[in-house]
Structures are given as C-alpha cells and as structure tokens.
Amino acid sequence: MGERILVAVAWPYANGSLHLGQIAGAYLPPDIFARYHRTKGNEVLMVSGSDEHGTPITIKAEQEGKPPSEIATKYHHEFLEAWQRLGISFDLFTHTDTANHAEVSQDIFLTLLDKGYIYKDTVSQPFCPQCQRFLPDRYVEGTCPYCGFRGARGDQCDECGQPLNPAELIEPRCRLCGTPPQFRDSEHFFLRLSAFQDKLLSWVRKQKHWRPNVLNFTRRYLEGGLKDRAITRDIDWGVPIPLPGYESKRIYVWFEAVIGYLSASKEWAKSTGDAQRWRYFWQGDEVKSYYFIGKDNIPFHTIIWPAMLMGYGNLNLPYDVPANEYLTIEGKKLSSSRNWAVWLPDYLARYAPDPLRYLLSINMPETGDTNFSWYEFIRRNNDELVATYGNLVHRVLTFVYRSFDGCVPVPGELDSRSQAIMEQAKDTLNTMDRLLYHCHFREAIRSAMSLAQETNRYLDEKSPWKVIKEDRQAAANSLYVALCLISHLKTMLYPFLPFSSQKVHEFLGFKGSVESDGWQLHLPQPGQRLLPPEPLFSKLDEGLVAEETARLGHAH
Ligand SMILES: [Zn+2]
Ligand SMILES: [Zn+2]
Image (tube, rainbow, N blue to C red; front, side, top):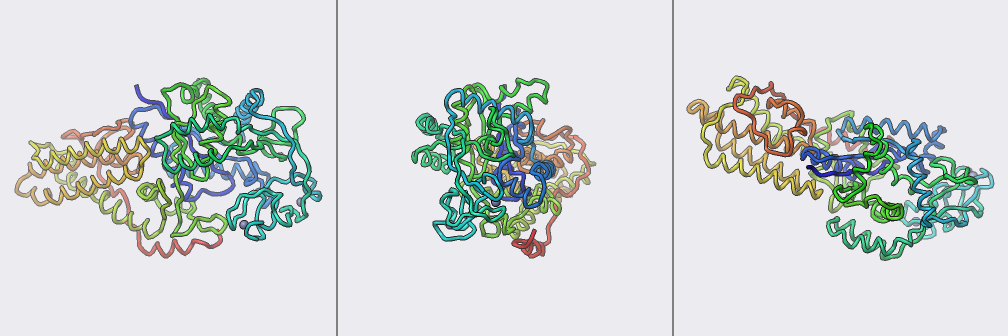
C-alpha cells in the first residue's frame, strides 16, 4: 500500500505572465516531487489555481479599462498553457472565481464565526470623497514616512520595503483621481489569530523536519506575538460575505486564497465522480500535505492557514512547507515593473522545456538565493545536458542500433568493473530516493548527473567502438551495461526531465510511460527491439547570451 501525498502549490495572481523566479520558487519543485511520488506508486493529489481576486487584479483591470474577470481569465488561460508546455503536472489547476470556491470559503468563514474565531469590529478606512468609495490599501499613495519616497503605496513602500498602512503616509492621495482621502469608520470582520498563538507555537516547535529558513522565520514571527487581522474589505470584487447587510464588502483575498487548496481538492473530487474523495487527502494520519511556495508566502502557510485549519477542525495541518528562496536574474533582484525578468511564455516560445527544468533544478534556490544567467543556461545546456547526458545516450543507442541489428545485445559474464558501476547505479537510485523524499531536489539531480559522468568514463575505458573489431562479445557486454545505465538514468531524471526521459524510454524499446514502470532499476531485455534514436537535446549558440540579456530591462 503506497503513501498518500497532497501536493499543494502556491496560487499565482492572474494579473500578469509567470516569470522564471516563480517557476524556480514554487512551480517546478512540486512537479518534481509529484512525479517522483507517482513513480514510486504513491497516490498524489497536486492542486493549485489562479488567484483571481484582490487589488493586484483590480488595479491592472482599471489600468486597462477592462472588468477584473476579463484580466483574470486571460492570464488563467495563459497559465494553463504554460503548465502544459513546461510539463507541470497538476491534477487540477482551477481558479478562485468559481461557485465551488465561494461556497467552501463561506463555509470556513461561517464556521469560524460560529466558533468565535471571527468577530466584528469597526475600523477607520480611507475613503475618496471624489470617487465616492472606500479605498483598498494599494489604492492610496503618498510619501513614505521612513525614507521620503513620494510614490509609496498604502500597503508598502517599494523603495525601502517597509510595510505601511494608509494612515501612515504623508500627503496621501487616491491613486485613481489624486484627491486626498478622508478616513471613515467601516464595520469589518477580524480573524482572532491571537487565540492560536500558543497552539501554533507548540505545533511549530515539533516541526523539526522543516527547512531551517522556514522554521526560524515562523518561530520569530510567532514569538513577536500574533495580532488579529481584518479579513474583509470595502470592495466589490471577491467572495461575498455570506451574511445580510454586507453586500458592499467582500472576504479579503489573503483569507480566501489559502482556502483554495481545500476548495480545489473538493472540485477535483467532484470531477472524479466521488465527491467525498477529497477527504482521502485531508483527513487522517496516513496522508502528508506539502505546501510549495516562495519565501514571501511563509507566514500565510505556517501561521495563518494552520490557524484557520485548527479553528475549523478535523482537517490536516501542513506536514511540510518547503519554501524556496529567490532567484536573481543576471545578478540583480528580479523586478516585474522594471521588466528585469525572464517571462515564461517568452522562454517557451524560443526553447524546449527540459533545458530550463534542468538549470532551475541543478541551481534551485533551496537554501539561499541563486542566480539565473543566460550564460549559465547556455553553458549547462551545452556542456551538461548535450555533452554529458545527451551524447552518452545518442552515441550508445546509435552504435548499438547500427552494430546489433537494432536490438539490445546479449551480454556474457560481466567483469568486476561492470558489476561495480551497476552497483553504483543502485546506490544512486537509493540516494536520490532519500533526497527527493526530503525535498532536496538540487542534490538529487546532481547525483544523477554524477552517474552520467561515471558512465561516460566507463565507456571511455571499455571503448566498445574499437573493441568490437576484435572481441564482439566484450563490446556487447559493455554496451549492454551502458544501455542498463541509460535506462536507470532516464528513471532517475524523469521527475526533472520528463520529456526527454520519456523519449529515452521509447528509444530503448519500452512501452507505456516511465512513471508506470516505477522507481526501480529497469533492465532492458537482451534482444529487446530499439527505436531509431534521435538527439535528445540541441546545442545552443553562444551568441544567444548577448541577444537574450539585451532584452532585459526594456519595455516588455
Ligand atoms: Zn520608504
Ligand atoms: Zn478618488
């Protein structure tokens, strides 16, 4: 009986294209993890969706003069296409603007209200007398009281990074019309986070398997003391409050977006024809839930969402939150507004998916920030994917195909060197098993690549292309071993490089999918018919480095 794994993936805001920082931070890691577990024969549910509410969407919609739903739908479709092309294998990628999500969010809201974990209070909110509306934090701009920057927003100063509230801004103004806002009282609902302080702290202290960055951040945050937070806003785009008299207000995005993990699981269950099947991934000790996010999202997943789950009851808390650090681009902090970013649709229009998956895996920002540069992308593609792995596969398959009638050669007795490298492959598979299980993706792909290098050394020593002239059986032996090692490599690399692994699987004459063959060493049968091999990867021209870096920082 396999394990059950919920792979919960961060919800991207549907207000712009995805960039490589998001892919390295929150989307590639869960896909590697899900593919690994599926290959192990474990049951995986991997869900996420587009976050379609909140002011990042409405601001974009107002800029473009379109309804928020139109903006959100456009990017939602772009995301769906990107997942498919990059091979991010969601079981369901939905969005927050669905009746199901509203229903699940409202149920949690009402249950927490009923249990006293949500309460009403009056707050002073900016109101624009010209626009005749309350202004969300991001709709108020002014001068930062900390650094004097004139374009600070009501939620944060982008210049000095200081979190703000609108009342702190000097000379505040409405970002829509420029009028100074008034402050008016408005009734809102608050999540009683303070009630969970002790319970959360004792829970977090037990999470010794969490990454140190996640654990330390969360403990510091909790030890600073939790304040109750308003979870509703005076806006008209979002999930309605399920109580009469609050028609002009909505549940705020940070409260309902995290509920998406649960609502998506319920939507998935309905689609399978067994509406209760979501429980299988949310209740009981036998299932583990992993939340894959970027580090800016840590408190929502280690404090706020667990508090909501504790308050609601009878649902599993996160087992692990393997948050990643940031990816810099050419040594500089990524910035969407300055277009210092590599956009996923642009990448996919020009290059194959596996070289990107390779680079972002081998250079994953797991324990500290890492850098993406086009120079390194081209170098690793040419020197590692093409030269170390791709050429190994291609030269062995081509030679065997030509010299052994397109079939796996029949080996004789293997010498100790050959036996040793086969043993090493077994060790690598076990090492990778342990690393992947604990979300150490970078180290895992590095061990697979070491085995590929060792296989090249083995072939250089045995040089079957020369030996075949005098001793056909000796050549058959080393080529058979090489085919076995290539078959092992395609399994080990499958979570990282699914497209090329599936190709190798087929070149070797295996049927079905790599995944369905399981996480095990898979020996080709002597006599097994091969398919005519083709190169796995293409060498990229070094001139592309200059061409690609020139795009950075210019208008998108
Ligand atoms: Zn500032
Ligand atoms: Zn205004």
